[in-house]
Image (tube, helix red, strand yellow):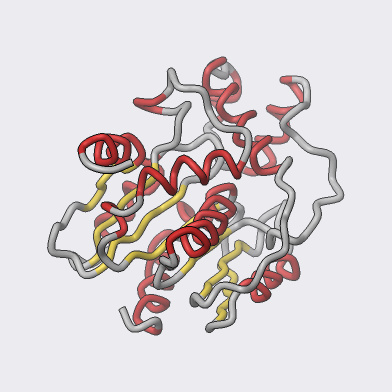
Length: 255
C-alpha cells in the first residue's frame, strides 16, 4: 500500500497529541484495554517540544467505536504495521505501551524488524508481565457481566459510575481487548537489539515484579526495570515520574 491510501490509513490509527513536524523523535503510545488515544493526552504538557507524541487509536473506541475491535494480536499488528510503514516511521521513533498496549508495542516492534528491518530507538512497557510468562489465573474476558465488572474494580482504573451502568459498546470493546491480551500465545524469537525499559506499580494486583523482570530476555541491548509507588495505572497515578523515566531512557539511548 502506498500513496494517499496509505496516508489515510495511518490517519485512522494515529492521534497527534503533541504535533511538531520538526521533532527529533516520535513517541508512539499504545493504550491499555478499553482505552483510546486520549488516555495519553495528559502527557503532552510533560514532554519537551522535540518529542512528538503520537497515540495509537484502535478500533472500537472513541471516534472509531463503530468499528469491530480486534481480538487477535497478530491480526492487529499486521494491519497496524502496514498502516504506519513507511510514512509514519520515516523519522526516529520510540514505543510506549501500557498493559495490553505493552504487548501490542512489543509485537509491532518485532514485526517491523522482521518485515522492514526497522526498529524503534527504545521500547517502554508497563504493567504487563513479560510475554513468555504464562498466567495461571482463569481469563477474565469470558466471565459473566457481574463477575467481569467486579474484576475491573480490583484494578482501580475505571470510574465507579461507568461500572454501575456500563455502556454495552464499551463492554464489547473491553472484552475484546481482554481477549486479545489473555488469549495471546507467545512465540519464541531472537531478542530485540533495542533498549528496553519495563515499569511496574508496587501495588499492581495482577503484575508481579519477577514477571516484569522477564522482559530483560527480549533485548540484547540495555535493560531497565523500575517500580513506582502506584497501582496498575501508573501512567495516570504517577504520570510525571513515568514521563521523566521515559525521558531518561531516551537520553540514554542517544535520542
